[in-house]
Each structure stands twice: as C-alpha cells, then as structure tokens.
Image (tube, rainbow, N blue to C red):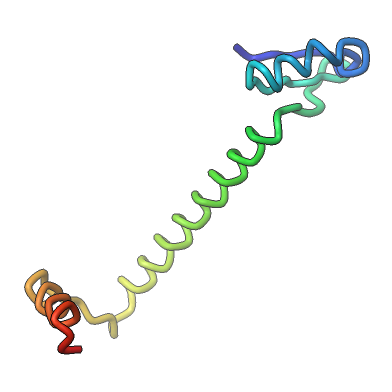
Amino acid sequence: MINIRPVSDLRNKYPEIEELVLKEDEAVYLTKNGYGSMVVMSLEKYSKLISDAEYNEYIENALDEAEKELDNPNTKYYTHEEMMKMAREVIDGKK
C-alpha cells in the first residue's frame, strides 16, 4: 500500500513514520502543499534500489557493447563446435 503523508507528519508523527519505514519496510511519500516533495525509506531498501539500478546500468552497457561489436565488420564469430574445441584445449592445458 502506498503511504502518502504531508511533510509535517515527519516532525509531528515521526515514530509512526519510522515504524512504517523500518518495521514494515515501506517507503513513505511526503507532500508539501499537496505536491510530492520527497520519499523516506530505510537504508536497506535504498541500498537495494541503488544496487538494482547499478546492475541494470551494467547490463545496458554490456548490451550496448555487444551491439557495437555486432556492427563491427572485423568481429570474428565462432561456431559452437569451434568454441567447444577451444574450451577443451584450455581445459586439457593445450593453450
């Protein structure tokens, strides 16, 4: 459930907001003059949010690199058999 509160609740009802944020692991959206102002969340929830965003950025960058490589005419492609042969050589210590 989304918790939307006036920013004054942060001062006047801090224990209530703290319980929602820490014990119920919910974000609380604060408004000022009827408009969104800020969000309060636990450090754990914030850390996960940042980690997820960084992971998504990493994946997007990797996909962008792969697309560039795909467009490069000098990119060498290997068949499944060639890759298996190269992997076997590495495993067997021949490379």
